[in-house]
Image 1 (tube, protein in one colour):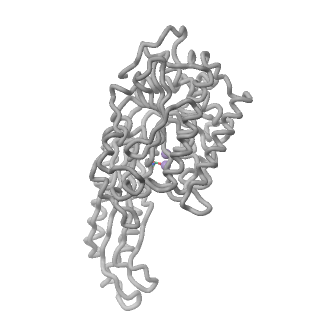
Image 2 (tube, helix red, strand yellow):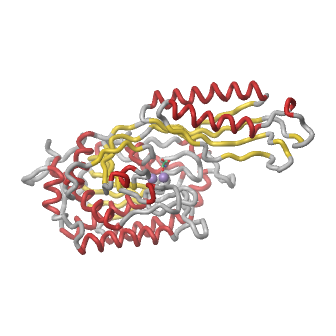
Length: 443
Ligand code: HGY
Ligand code: MN
Ligand code: MN
């Protein structure tokens, strides 16, 4: 663990001390319930900043990105933070420690969404982070380090395809080639930066330094069914799946749906259908997970054989080598289908992030934070969902806190839901973890 400042005398160690100091057994108290209610009300307010009538959709460098940054800045200021928007469009807030200018413990998650999203993915983690700082301010507590909240501007990659853009800028791993990516309207990221009021040639200024960072903690909804099945509110994350994303184009020959006999067809959609089923089979056979989330057939006439199909591939695995084996197997199947059906394939990799393992010491601080809420045997979960922590791992040690989401853990869907009591417990655990970092520091 880098840059651990030596804490002042704090007696007991770890998050238990943090909880004791904070008196954060606030779960179930009126204060905890009121804070959770405020967090959920803010999730609802943020959900109104959307480009999708009747739904939630907020993408990078959009007017809604700008308006939620202003809202988050206001809430950060109310929580005692100084605020700024960084060169990548992340909204940042800083709460000084007792040594002004000390390295910072970073708390964060993202404010952008997928298409037709829920209202808690990313958003809950940003608001829990702000609420933790608000508790420190109200208690008049200053820690041996600063606490910064980063509301990342693009984790999902909805607009431009490449993902983790905000956190990669903060981690110093921004790729300037991304500025040439174009959105569905043909607008380049470079032009979108300028229209948003940012200088695309200064993105590197958003990068943090490891020397100025104590670590990174992220609270996030689980986006899966396991906490609900186990009837637990919280879990600590062990590791995050490595992901690769591709944009593929399968090309055959368009033709008359009646006039072209089967033996003369080069049907791109029939070929794509075989490949989509192979994606599922090859991933399942290797305990990985792969999804074709987007597929478009052209020209799209009901009486025209599809001559071209454009589709996506999202491929993840706990171990990068197994995940890469799946990609090789999918490529082999695709080659066989193309040879047999007289098709051609083009594949462009649009995203790659290796699997990352949580820092053992910060992971234990999260565990102790959960234990401080009364769950004395905290659950540990592997995350198949990607998170900004994957990018922040290049900068600093990281750990994550998962919060139960109901409805079978549904996410990336309007039915995404969290329970107010779980939010109150998560706030207690997250605050205890932040204080635990302070009291663990010397170890
Ligand atoms: O795709 C993911 O796993 C994340 O929600 N971006
Ligand atoms: Mn997501
Ligand atoms: Mn997310």
